[in-house]
Length: 208
Image 1 (cartoon, rainbow, N blue to C red):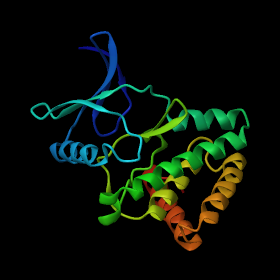
Image 2: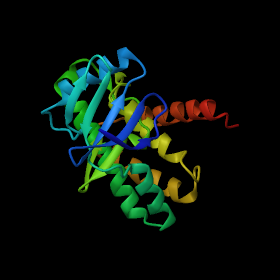
Image 3: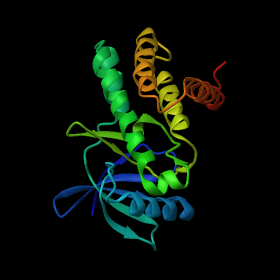
């Protein structure tokens, strides 16, 4: 197995590898509990109405997982390009696709019954492949609601470069409008989740 490149990851060692002429993603976990947790959630979500990469192989001894490679065009990269090119409608559509992914995630019986949320809503955890959204990194799943996930996702969006730009503020308002029209999330819950995540982002990044 040949290592082609290393992907950016704060918690684990993640590589693009080549094996038998095909590209795959190798993830080596720094923590055994995260390895076991992610492995369990891939088992739970497999076969549900939600897009995640296929697991090719698990190695308990090395605490690693080998995934299919579906490309590495993250939502962040695409959204940043949309802003550079002033493509407001396309940006709104993409964020609403991520929202749809989150709704599907929260509709999974195990997730719904145990009142869990995806929680780590970095837009780097969403890959666009053949116009579909795939979620990756399941090790942060914990107790929480759809409104918490959506609020965190929208707050994260606002704090990519350029932070809270006019473009982002316009996109945010239109995305919120679309989401609230569905009636699944109360306006006050969404605002609370956005505000709370903003405070956490400022603390993490030491923004005053």
